[in-house]
Image (cartoon, rainbow, N blue to C red; front, side, top):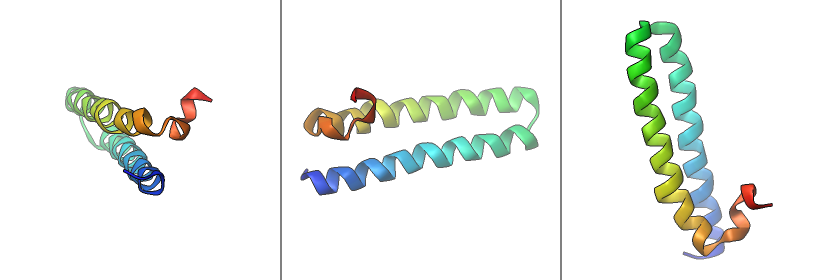
Length: 70
């Protein structure tokens, strides 16, 4: 993937993480404690997969896009 496409891909992956985090905030207000804890675990798993399966692959080919390495 070229650098420009990788940067755009990264933006979309980060937006996924942001949207899932916002959805979890809404769920906390509208769910029982048990239901929220189940959702939190599931969302955490999804975010971890986006990070490790998608973003890590982008960073491997384009390390300059990894803001944590600076």
